Image (cartoon, rainbow over all chains, first blue to last red):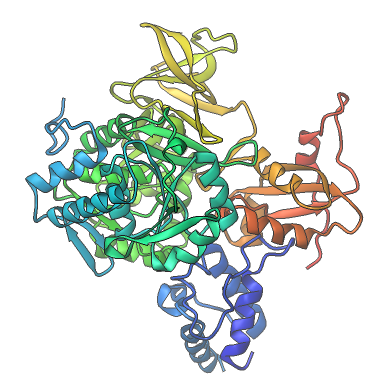
Length: 91
Length: 527
């Protein structure tokens, strides 16, 4: 995952319903870097957890519990900023 | 009986009267806090009157059924009170549900007006029949209604003074509207304000959807006490830590929520590390509170009163128990006894009162007027002989046993209704929706309580997993079915898993064997 666009596809995957995952609702709008994920109701508490676990698996890092807060999830851009900081800290 | 400001006098007998009373007594007190928006009581009351006048001009009259499809916020509160003041029967709807579901709600409830706002207008327009047109109201509200006035559409059976409708999951695949009178909702709202001794200094934390009966406390008990209601921002709801911080920073004094939320706050929100210091009332309803978590709460918040409120939407709250201080997880938990003015007793299958085990039946001012089905009012209540004589009663479908000290202990359900995170779901509702999908022949939805699997799969505290077993034409595909269901059902009703099978197991009598499906280990699902 090298760009905020990659993160957008990851979020889309995480919130799109499949039979093997807890069913969510396919987002009615395409997820862009500035999509307001929370205001539009794209991410609820379960979807947030799916996104967190997808990020953890894809980047092989641990997303700190204390950072699962609204400010980091408002838009893909916000999340990308935080994830980038996290990666620098880890490496 | 009442010594709480705003709950005794007035006596208007109307929900919007609570607001008018509060505005008269406490005009400058804060009524609603929604993010950066603050509304005082006089200000809110004026907005509501203006909205009511505009609705009257757009054909809303006594008994008109009006849906409010707005996001949770101060605008929705203005719309709800405004429609009530215009004399309407008001149905709060979920702005996030698929328009196809709202369309069913409109037809099932016989709604003739739909209120929306610019940010929910697209979904609202997709929900209404052809020939409905938008009209702009004050405060950014939009009213959709049939272009031609059709007075014959107004059902004569609707209460002339208006009322409230809460839609729940119904067994036929159609949302079932629970029609409540002003008195039904008022009785609970005033009882709760009295019992919790709410006053103008209280700050009520509102997190429930307005479609959920818990929100009647947030909206109406708050007004009964001239307290302030603080709306938990939608963006914060998904983050337990942020919710815990919000409870503290808003100095919330009373909260009414489902145990699932309390559990999330304790375990994922780290509530024990920063307990909300101002919280004096913590009420819960909708599902049993996991005993170990409740004990944790009593330890962490020793000065907070915990209340278990019980009742289906049809009766709002009919029994309650204040959790005794020093209660332990090993102690039995009950749903307590009837609230003031309400009669609750147990009956056997022949409709006779019983002292041992039986179905919880309710009589009194909280019992709904009836269901809205195909636009008409259908009254499912029956006359039952209580200790004080025959009464109009609602049979809840919940089975209970009476404890030696006269309290009620829940045993289970008589039918296929389940609760998930406080949401009531009729499993037949999901099956009916599946049956309408192309290629589906039969289906059976089972609810499995499997805490470990649920936690592992989703990280959720939700212990109930819904599994849909489906048969049908060759090529029927689980992913397609899930996608189709997500277009038709609210998120809380979607199955966690859809399994396509060649056939469903049957009992000796040829009925689908639900019990066997429930215990069958689910097949491997490939990612």
